[in-house]
Length: 440
Ligand code: GDP
Ligand code: MG
Image (cartoon, rainbow, N blue to C red; front, top):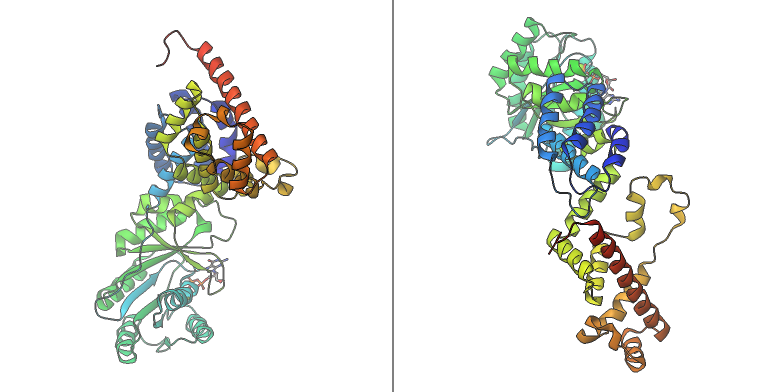
């Protein structure tokens, strides 16, 4: 995926405090290539790169992220935005039934998606859909929908193939009112290519049935063609949404990225297989992760962001510099680490973790952390700020109060002292590296 391409470039800018223009340029070169390779529309790529570059250059790097992760975060946010940001809802008519018209080229998956959508409406929204067989041209199209209806145990309205699709749609809506079906999903005919006759017929059905949604079904495997089809259908018919099918196949997902930008129509559902439950609401954010091919890293970034308060991080850094880091600060840090979830899970999400042998067997002992917490919590305020006053009798008291042993208390205090020493050394080195009067 895109992420693989970024790994090398990311390595180079790791450890920098600020993302420079040259860094971003280098990363964007990779992003551009990857997107073009994934069959994303050229103009979309150009605009996208411009936006991400503008947002990334000169950004202060969050304490919890590496510069590379920071750029990836911007890339992901912009990818999500490109595909529509929030996921969209399905329409509900003021007066039932809600009419949904399915359109698209032959073989895109209209009939299958009609069944899947009906299934989803019933399962997720508790609706009672009726399916309408309005493809009177393709041999066996009516039979195909009827079979799906049987499988779902749902009504299929059909008048054979000698009645016009417009008339079928009209009668179907009447019947749905009588039978109290709150959704009517019209499966229409497709052609191999867009032609005037097909469009005229679809326009006629649209005018008569006044649909609340017109969903274009497109095959994700067709890449840029799917994008062009979406653009033409929207111009000629006006769409409310796109269903992108066959995403379970070996597709690079580029169509998903360009469709909304080019056709001005959001993707509403994705088809992920031939079965009737293989339809999902489209989540722009999830798709962005899929395209980046790095769900785990993104989760890690999000967790780090949600849990480490930037102000606190700054304060902590200052404390480390002045070596006024107390046991209370230590405790708070432990808490933050814990909020991010089980430690071993977290470690596994680290980039490159999959390459470390034996990580699967690694168990970070959560119990150990809660023991340390208990010990610190059993100290007085004064003890936490000045651990040097903790003598033998205080140690005994602390051990008793926390339900731990004196050797454990000793070990913790020793570790804390070592840590402070190390911090002093580290910040000392940093100081030497800076110019005189470098910081307050
Ligand atoms: P229509 O001509 O647009 O009505 O297309 P159909 O609904 O008849 O579907 C054409 C073929 O695509 C059928 O074999 C479907 O099973 C298959 N199909 C539809 N949607 C999906 C999908 O999301 N994934 C996969 N793998 N196959 C699909
Ligand atoms: Mg069909």
